[in-house]
Structures are given as structure tokens and as C-alpha cells.
Image (cartoon, rainbow, N blue to C red; front, side):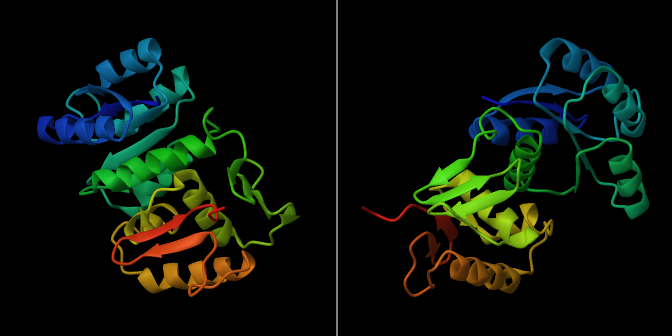
Length: 227
């Protein structure tokens, strides 16, 4: 069970995020201060840190380099500050991702999964296999029935995300947030176009799907063919 440290001074937000992540299968610890966060990172050694910037004892922009001084744990900055220059500065300073409030629990959970995959957590280090589809996320290669697939970057990211969630149905909102990094939606057509391209490379169509199945009004899932 991956562990997540949530550093957030707002008690309401802290509790809501903790409940959502716990329901999603994570071990969660929360801290309201920078001092508590630094102690928890050293003592508890979480797999991911979700870091708010507006902490009462020290600004999160100062906490990030301190975390980097004691651990290489992935850090997702979660804040109401949406200034692009600040975002770029924090990513350059060692943050692994940046999410702007208000965000949904679903979006945060998706970003945590993405960060864990990029950092090669034990569950995702081996190739993902769904029927004849194999996706090697660290090496960014995929194959169908042993034949390499020629995929664009977005096609690979889309396939990898669906493979990691297989056989669950993934919403378009989640795909936009994780693959296209568009947390506010508005790009359903983009998802549909890339799904269409991916279907062609998997040798199927929307009318006659083998691996990619659309669940009307919900989303899409990657599932091995029956039999």
C-alpha cells in the first residue's frame, strides 16, 4: 500500500484529502506544519508528499528545498497560487508536479499514481500486460502480440494510463488531468481523437473493439479480449 504524507494547514481540506486517499487505497498521514512534515518525511518515509505552500510556520517554497535535503521522495505541490512563474520555479526547484486548488480528490489520486509510476514504484516497475498488449512504462515501449507499436508520446501515455488502471473504467476527466494535464476539462474531443488513433494501432475500431471499450456516459477501459 503506497503511503502519502499530506501537508496542509486547513483542517477541513486536510481531512477531506485524507479520507479520499484512504478510500483509494493509500496509507495516509497528515501534518499541518512544515516542522511536522520534515519530521514525518525522515521518520515515516512516505512514498509521496502532497505539499501546501501556505503553512503557518514556514512557507512551502522554503520547505521544498529542505525536503530535498533529507529525501528524494516525490513532492506534489498543492496550492491556491496559480502564478505560472511560481509554478515553473517550484518545478525547477525539485517539485514533481503542481496542482492548483480547488482540485478534486480524483485528480489528486491520478497525479499521485502518475508520480509513483514515473518514480518506478514496485507495483509498476514490471511491464503491464493485458492480453496481448504489453506496456513497459520505464522504457516507454509497447507491443501487441510481440510486435512493437509505433506510438506518439500522448498515445503511449494514454495506453500506459489505461493499462495501469485495467480493467477499471477511466473517466475522460481523469485522462485529461493526467495525460493532457488539463484538470478543468473541456477537451473530450481530444481524448476521442487519440483513442481513435490508438484503436487503429491496436487493430480495432470503435464499432468492433477488442481492447478499448467505451462505457457510454462514464469513460473508457482497456481490457483483454474474452477467450
